[in-house]
Image 1 (spheres, rainbow, N blue to C red):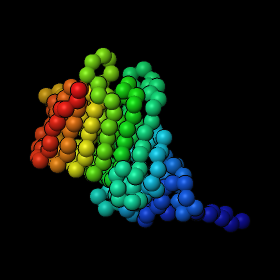
Image 2 (cartoon, rainbow, N blue to C red):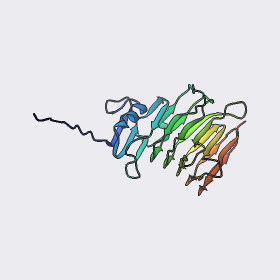
Image 3 (tube, helix red, strand yellow):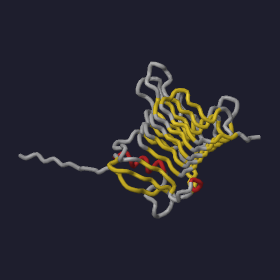
Image 4 (tube, rainbow, N blue to C red):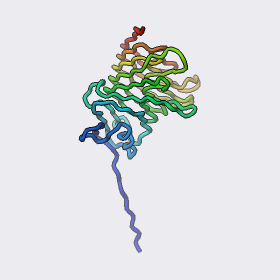
Length: 239
């Protein structure tokens, strides 16, 4: 008697996909598009988001197949950052947990481009939150805004990278370019491992951004090596 076996090979995702409510859209929400990537990535993937407001708390986990060649780009379909508004207004962390409106949690080579992110809930740890060893993350031409926070227990960072205090836990090679960051407690917080015995976070690029009306600090970099900070503008004209 001959035993037969079958093998079903499923290819990963690659190419350009559309997110939104139109008949042309491949996915209705950002999170549903991200969830589809669980089968893996075998080429560069671009998600183009139709104009509109998206009330979502998005989480991008570690994804199989991402690389310098097989990148993930999430951008507005129009190329105008004001056309796609991503927000969330409810923050309910478990004990000891921190997260943001848009979270990159272990994925590498992700670019967010021509998008707006906001919240009126200043309890969030961040609006864009990067953690769990996410490397080569880029925000380009994005607008992040929240109410100004200058006192109390809320410490909303508009962009927050967080690393555990252990070796090889950093979110290296983070890039923020041509963005507008308005309000919050801190504009950009680059939080690499802080113990002197561990290798510091490295390779961040912060260029040509505008920081406006943060309640505490526009840019906070407590532990970072080989960082490039150039051509940024800082304003405080809040009344």
